[in-house]
Image: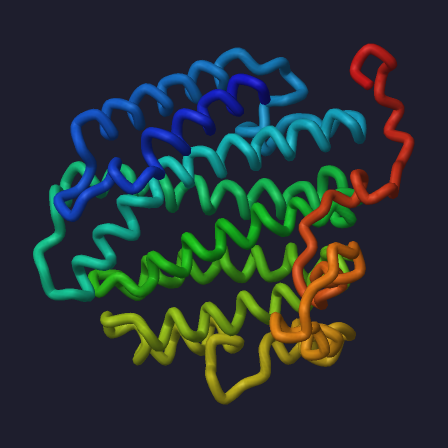
Length: 300
């Protein structure tokens, strides 16, 4: 994880900075940085102990603490790759919608494919963990943040004009798996995973309607994913919308905050309250909910 952290720092400063991506695509320096970081991630993948090899979904399920480490390492690994390559997806999509030719499309397509592949892997890893390998991880709200990041990337790709129905179905199938993961989450701050899953479904519907391709007229896709139909309730057979006890909204106290004209005291009570209803991605365990996973003393 420490090595991935160093790679993330490089990506943040040399890839995601404003000067790294121009209207004409990646600079030579940025492209070299991405290749270097990709190679470094591959080296990490080749030196993992057996119980951390997240890329092998058929590996025997280990102890709880091993599965938690395996899952989080895999999610962090793929989120790093996703962040590294997602600028290419944004750049090409913006050019496509503006009617301008896509810059350096052949070189950018490799990055787009890598970003989408990692987004799918994030969903698959979360799904394996929540439903099969370590079900108690459904209490860890940080997993929801990984899944939401993957969904945003996948749905952003659907609005690309060149997307075919077959490709879109593959994307929506992974989004549907992500929805099931979020629906299963027991604790996501002051709300439930079901609230997030409903939000993802709304975003998916918007992405479908905003698409410049013909997929929005594909009735077969609507039949396969009924929750994409604007006239239907989100996954009505599971009644997700009815199960959301805490819809996302702002706390009423926010409307009563003092204005600048009222004058502010240097009192801690004048600070903006932190009880706004919405996302809270604080880890379940960091929030004081501790389980005994039998972690060896030398790993604590």
